Length: 426
Image 1 (tube, rainbow, N blue to C red):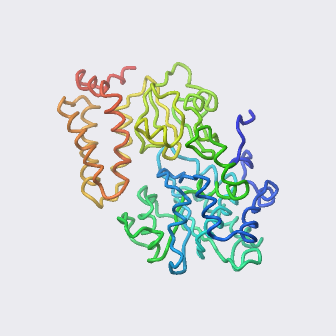
Image 2: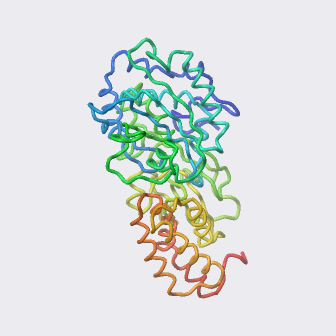
Image 3: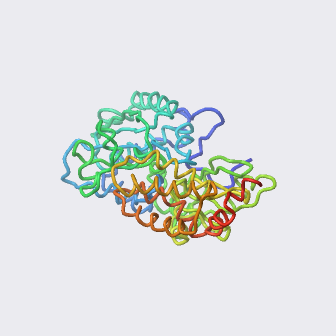
């Protein structure tokens, strides 16, 4: 089936193999890099990305241009550019698909972003389960280097950058920016509380820009086609660009789909993911991965944009849509997610270390017929306490619980009143 919308990040997507360097160049690859080295200053690149309103695609949605601009002109050298390919958010697999589709698009994006801050060293931080992706990067980086796109005096210019692949030891917390920097320096991956921010003092005390795989993949297209073109790809006025949505759960055709920012949730599920599986009715979804709040049926037609989801009390996050049907117990689903976050907490601060196991215990009791009415205000208090944690891990971990309490409190009460999970007999 031909894609309904223009494919930008997936333009070279082929079944079962990655695009070669020559195929990437035939589609316009490395034209943006050539152009900036010939006629753009580092500030020109920063301004073009900022004007495009590119928001980080790794979950935090921080403006990519603002991040680049925050590296001071007089900042010391060497400067670092880091690509976060740690993708350990449950339900999220877009970066893996991108790596296995068009690795040179990501590599070119890293080089251009590196040029924007005059970085000399690039690092791709990748999770251990993505060993095939790490090998792809190792091979294609060497190919790019031999072609003159990496190394000393890239394409005969005065700019030099090289990239290495760093295989993570493997913890979810390593996806947090400052924890990832600690991991790269061989330290325990606990988060660091800014200021100073990494763009001022990051790796080994030097300026460091860290962004997501999908974010870097957008950059060559912005430079080649312009910021107005990029903003025009979105369906909403507040949006910009396309987004890779990875859909899983109770749908007929789970997978990754590149669609305009602002595409409605109903369209994503019904047209691109093939609709709900037979005998299922939409009950809820996590719209942006495991660390976003549930969306109930009243938001089934919502525009999938950063602003619209924020106004609905949720987040676009990574764009990983996890779909639940009417036969699914959302108490059990929230308990399952909480178990994951309990295991992956770094244990650095009290709200996360103590609060998450406490929430897990209450949810386990409710799910297993030991729930009491007083557990509900206790869950609500603990939910609020976790927002006082040291980093964004705990607020993300408690997001499904927030959605459960806001939209499905009746389901919690039904567990308590019946003294069992009402879904186990369905």
